[in-house]
Length: 301
Image 1 (cartoon, helix red, strand yellow):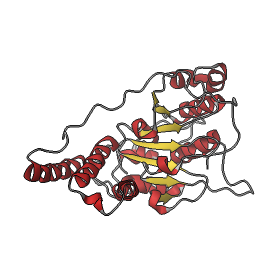
Image 2: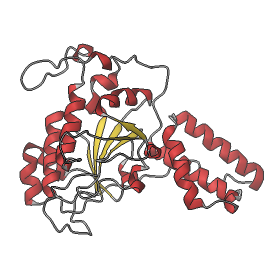
Image 3: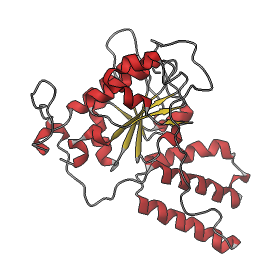
Image 4: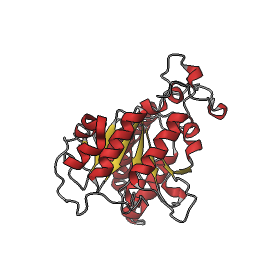
């Protein structure tokens, strides 16, 4: 059993995108405290974070939500993660990442050699947009068994985190904490996936994003877009990058190749080859776009 799977949620961060309801913010923070997630991030929240409702519903996780970093958008919120799994209340085109059910998530993480990974949840009204989902390498759909086809945001987070936490095989670590009922979790044999120590971890999304931008600028400089539209081509290239499991060495090797093309043709490297400083998150503040409702019961789509 790999270290990743034996402590699955310790390697996870939860990213809430454009959340509209402070009640949901508080509930998700409480869930993170229940299930051992210590990395909670907010991307462009549409409600006040530090308010009475958030604090009340976060219960014992008030510090977690009030100290959660706030990012301007999803790409910057994925800083330091090597893999992102989006969520959707409806089936999406496979071009927007590999479609997954909850039981498939552990194998997907191992197959993609994930280090820290992100579980991304869209807002209550319409979930993740296509423009946001394209930054994820897989997307997760939760089955429903009644006429309603999607869950409330905090409910979707609860189902996802609890299911992944319950997959922990405690035989891999005799000192692993048991549940609050004092009973060790029952192991799930299908998740006894062999360790692949020979393969380095996946590159962070920051590094891949820099490579993606460099690749587009290189194509533009070599006049690739004379016969095709750059804005239409870019999502296709992003889909390709999402399907490929690149290590940091792979990224640097490809950047070196592109730099040599520039050097040979133009006498310079085209773009800086050292990573730039990522967007610095802010502390929770009142957003520029205030929410009109305190909480929404409509669900991520």
